[in-house]
Length: 62
Image (cartoon, rainbow, N blue to C red; front, side, top):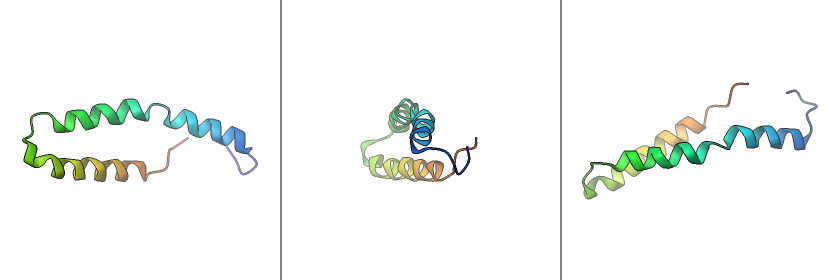
């Protein structure tokens, strides 16, 4: 990739990078709630979303 890449090529590359994310985040969110009491739902939701935001803030390495 360089500065002369077309928008279409950049879009396809980004699509390929993120195509598996739903298959990653849904199970992680489900597993995060297993075995926890209902009163902890807000806390675990905050932790999962915080970690998701931190993880997605790093640029992909090519």
